[in-house]
Image (cartoon, rainbow, N blue to C red; front, side):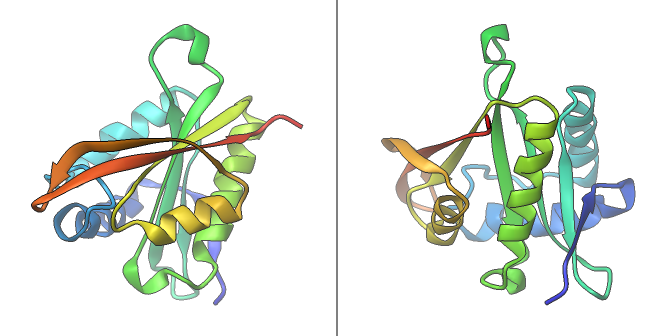
Length: 168
């Protein structure tokens, strides 16, 4: 599969909202329970851009957006300014085809280029096995496991905390 990874543009927001809505309503991969609108995504993307971090999309050979990834601040306190949290979601039909690896590699490279030193990923401990495997594949290491901290779709959920150094 040929994939183009590029910066998000306003025309991509409907696809980003569509991709994420699947995970909100039909999975435990995100703890979000109400799908974000295109307007919500526009505000989020503007905030990420204002902070100087990348928001990328992957599109297939037909020009359809099939995934997105971004980094944003890990915590609001200034001492954390060079640590980012990485987020990635793929269209269900795009999983297992190398799209995630291409997208995550490029968003981390861009974060590194913009000065990030560490990246954190927070991955659900139920229903996100593919995401966990992808993060490990690109070099994230598990540094913690928070058990039973959330509940969604009638299930108690925890999160894996993963970290990768972006320093050379």
